[in-house]
Amino acid sequence: MPQRDLLAELRAAHVAAPPEVRERIRLIALEAPGPGVHRRFTWRRAAVVAVPVAAALAAAVVLGTRPSHHNPPRASAVRGLPAHGAIAPQEKAFSVPVTPKRVQTVGATLSLRVRSVSRAVQRAVAIAGSLSGYASSVHAQTHGAHGTATLTLKIPRTHVQAAIRRLSALGTITSESIDLTDRQAGLNADERRIARLRAQLAGTTDPKRRAAITARIQALQRQDASTRRAAHYATLHLRLATPAAVTHPSRVWRDVAWAGGGAAALAVLLLAVHLARRVRENRLLSRS
Amino acid sequence: MTFQQAAEAHLDDVYGYLAWFTSDRFAAEELTAVTFERALRLWHRFDPSRGSARTWLCQVARTVALDHFRSERRRVRREELAAPSESVDFRFAEGLSPELEDALARLTAGEREVVALRVLLDLDAGAASRILGISPTNCTTRLNRALKKLEEALHAAA
Picture 1 (cartoon, rainbow over the protein chains, first blue to last red):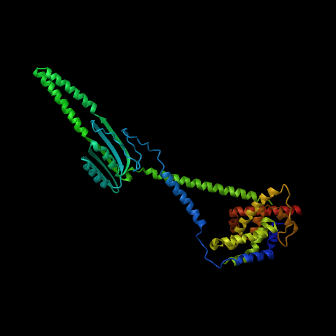
Picture 2 (cartoon, rainbow over the protein chains, first blue to last red; picture 1 turned 180 degrees about the horizontal axis):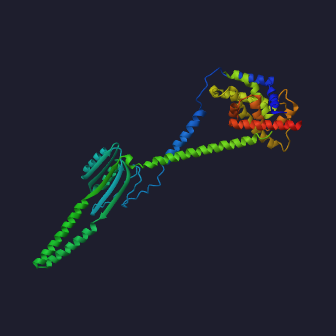
Picture 3 (tube, each protein chain N blue to C red; picture 1 turned 60 degrees about the vertical axis):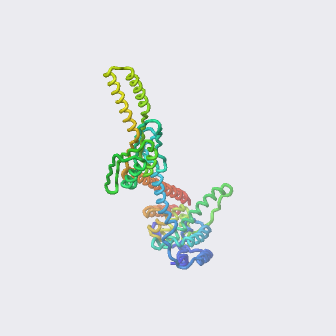
């Protein structure tokens, strides 16, 4: 039989539902409500959009809060090593083990991410003044929304811990370092040397020799006084910057790339599920 | 169009599609009822701008039929060892020659499905491919293969 005749015979065939099926469907249709408005919004349609968007957002949040591999670990306290990773504001700043009875020179560097550089500079200077210190140099500059400032603060050594604590509260610590050198041993040695020189001075009558010893004693005393004066104030270098200055620009793109990769993986997974379903369906329908 | 109007207009189409798809009259009757029950529940999702009510009802019927095939396959696996299933005498339609009836019965369910949609229901390739979830080209290819098989079966019978 040619295909044309075959198609004609198949098309001529008429299949009618049996009366009992017709009656059953009529009863089912009676339960239908009247003509209603076709809802374009359905939860299923909404989920098709909302689920991938939520997944992408979740991935971006999770990946965005992941610690960066490019950031070296933060240095521990009193190592004198700068730390570059942003430190959460609630984390405590370095503790400075100052011993008031000993003469120590203290230097500290603190980098902060602040919202407003000008306001942070004002508050930093005010903090220094309230702790009997002063700002020995202030350099601030702004370019549009981005601003940076560098301050050198002189703070009494005994108040350096309080100063670091209060300055840290101005923003988020991005790096910090402490340098502490004990000068007490050198001063003690100088005192012993002065005592020896005074003993020599008492035992000699030669005017030239006495003048030389006296000059040596005075030089040592001046040197010690200078060391004590220098040690009275700790030098605190404060670097302030707005977020744009410290945010790594590639980080945003990296997160976007991660989210895009996640979306692509999700798409591949969905495609694989679809193909597997199609294969199963074909296998199911390959029987007569 | 209301659901009642759609049901009345396309009952024979849905039944015919399911009867040819399953080649089982009793199953087709049951699946037709299940199809319209499900269609009633999902009627709010029907969007006339995306396709005709007939196409949409056939999509629902296909889902119901696939569920039937899956459960039937599980049942056959479970029971066939103990009691082989009986073959039920089934006529696809009034007016078909016994040779063509026999040839249709030898087609796979997938092949009968495409013949039912494209020939019996006279759907175009676009509508049929939407129901089958394949491309129109693929749909036409399937139809040609099915018709060729029918032709060969009829030739062998002659």
